[in-house]
Amino acid sequence: MVRFVLVADSTLARNYRSVPLLDFLASAPTGAVPGSLYAFLRGPPPPDDHGRAAVAPYSIRKLEAALLRDHKREEVVVAHEDHLSEFVDDDTEVVGVTTMDPLGLGPLTMSYAVFFETYSPAYVEREFEYLLARINRARAGKKAKLVVGGPGVWELTVRPDELDRNGIDYAFQGESDDILTDLFRYVTEGGGENTGFFRGFQTFDGQFRKQWKANSKFISRYQFSKQFPKLEDIPDIVAPSTKGMVEVMRGCGIGCDFCEVTLRPLRYYPPEKVTREINVNVAAGMKNGWLHSDEIFAYEHGRNFVPNEEAIMELFNAVMAIPGVTSSNPTHGRISIPAAYPNLMRKLSRIIRAGPDNWVGVQMGIETGSDRLASEHMPNKTLPLRVGPDGSWADIVWRGTYVMNKCYWRPAFTVQVGQAGETPEDNWETVALINRMSESTLDNGAPFEFTVTPMQHVPLGLLKSRDFSSVRLDPSQLAVYYASYRHLAKVALRDATRASSDANPASRYVTGLMIALGGWAMFRVVKRVCRRGGLDLERAARYGLDGRHLQAPVIPA
Ligand code: SF4
Image (cartoon, rainbow, N blue to C red; front, side):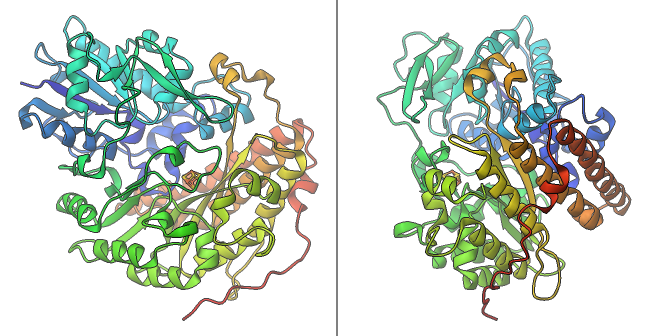
């Protein structure tokens, strides 16, 4: 008897041919990337285990583990997306879905929508709708409730009409590890007078102050009760997670003023908890330990955000000591730490066996090339280095990238367009940073290895109405897109054939070819849009290349 069927948004369940960053493709507009190309590059669906997903996104594995604390194995299923209807019957009480970007309102998806001035839905949005339609067909005439949760729920708070349109009974906002059984009971009993929950959601005003809004379609933790699970309330996953990802901490604490993660309390997983979860993935044949946090160098950090070198190394040592693990990398980090602690990076690289054939990928938000915006919006992100006494923010990013590349780490940077208080001068500073890095080389003449992707901020009012026609990028903003995609096209041509770690050589070759051609084709379109928007392409391509050479950092042998 299956009482709870869990299923992930399909865009989270693919492995995108094992190419780092290719999962960004799901944010592309359906009108711009041909369906056949998208279908190939996202890779095959996860393996099927008698209708269950043999591998599933980490977030859904956490929900599964939380339910299994209170329910029997046969009552809880993480369904394979193609077989979910086989599990939904008259006994099913809840179908739970986790999602990241259900309506395509995330900053990356917005960057494509605004830049291309398109109304065509992104793949993330279209696939979410398909999945919900499938679920609604499967539960038609049955009692099962449809509940959506996950980090993308904020988008539903912006456009609550989408819940009814997609047949969603409730959206849950927040972390649920410790209250999931109560939540599902609350939902199946019709939401009565149970006081453990608030019927509504949290939102933030312009000054990032929390507000509560009542809405009967939303459920959150009760305002005056515990808002987050404690570390000991968070269960270990019991079945394999997509790409071998496991969490190592929650929260961040660095305090960037545009970031909601920083408002969550810090909880660090001890190495034993991390290794227990990785062992689950290793048993399924995975060899890489992909460590998720929003800022790995904040793991057990000290005063003033000084990295706790011992704790970080202990964590990676524990991961690499697991029999069967051959590599490991973190999901996110901040660039000021490699810039300030080259020795730490060298030691970490030794631990995780980074080398010419094993580059370590990590996502890093550098956000801007402007000292003014960096100091205003993210003063702690630059610590322990300080913009001014330790050089400009662009110099810190340059030094950090140099150190990372020397230690065989390849950062995937993101920059923001449309930040609060942004001026054209700030954007040109970002262009200068990208151009300078794109032309930089290491002491052995090798080009800097990095990617950079623009993220677009769109005012909340426009997200609500979805009328992006009034968001007109000025030439300085277009220049940020131009510099980013110019560099990406260069990297795609240079690195595409070795980008994929797909085990199948033929698919690795085809993937590499498609990425190289895709990067080139994308840049052609970007050039056209920028020219039409009044950008002087020659100026944008040369901007910031003043021939200035920075002192290469000393990296201990
Ligand atoms: S460092 Fe990253 S995760 Fe932390 S507050 Fe800043 S943007 Fe958010």
